Image (cartoon, rainbow, N blue to C red):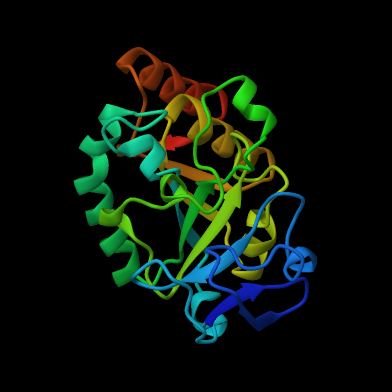
Length: 230
């Protein structure tokens, strides 16, 4: 049996579940949004049963988002391979260490789809729930005090628990990294700005399939959304 700590509707709850990566679907339905799920993770990628130190983390007004650094986007030959994503891993690792040293919460935003997800009419099947492809790449695995929020579309806010988590952590400012600059990063940043968050995008820690798409998205975020590119 694996212990997982979930942020429920009113408090953290410890729940025993089966060995499935995301637990038993029916058991956790009351703790989830329509599609999103949120949990603490261990250094090996498995969930830990220790109570989250909310009183300490909540003193920080910032959080660091790592978007879609998953096997089905990163590994060579993956269904939606983004070759440039492998190039940003070293910088991302450095930034994650920096955030942990500063006690800033790290939130991994992860694509997670059903086998028959409507998005597969647009894109090849990818990041299917429970598969290796849906896992965070080995180099960036979460640790015990990190968070994981799953999503089924471009924005990390759409039908997920992200906003609820940010409110619980008393976050006012987001630093954003990951892929793709012009898709999931852009739409997550847009939704964050529209919700009143101050947002910074870490330029060396985001990328796209092409430089043109990458630069266009950075320009949109900076000039239209008034996001700071750092």
